[in-house]
Image (tube, rainbow, N blue to C red; front, top):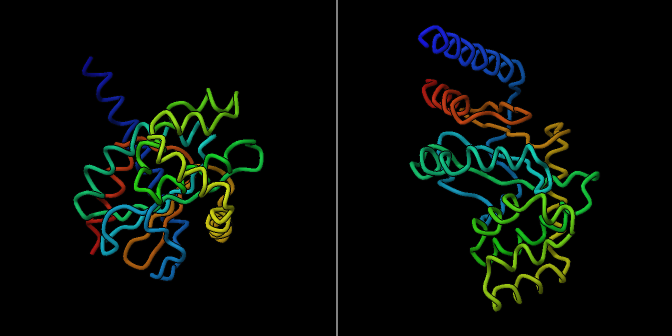
Length: 213
């Protein structure tokens, strides 16, 4: 048992070191003014020492994994404590038939202050609406009838696509080519990371950033 624990600990440390080396190599300077932040899709304090931009696709299984395994703990331990400013960026992949529709509904719900229950519903029921295409029904299951009337009006209005397109264009400037991709900003530097990371790895990396002088 002790041997297994030591082995597991060594593996975790190796993964963290590899992650730290990876992001350190990809750390160009960045402008501290992050553009086109939708306040309805951003969480925490703008003055937090670390900003995280998460480029995500609601139809992406890896994005679901990241959301369901790290989001709540990240919100509680870092965003809510004023350490991280978290920005959700829509990056609907062209290969996913319903991801842009889902992004529209999530953005519409966010304008009503209902971003959390709708994002949870979309990710937790991803396989169902991916097969059926029933994004509307998935969202309606967690909102009231008056809220859904407002959401549908916003979706049909067509204005939400401009914000989604801005997120997508910004992702291209970061050379995002897969989801999820997380871009960390801290003390004048930016660290992009593609793929899912466990909460333990994320925590260690955030603590490393926060400890920098």
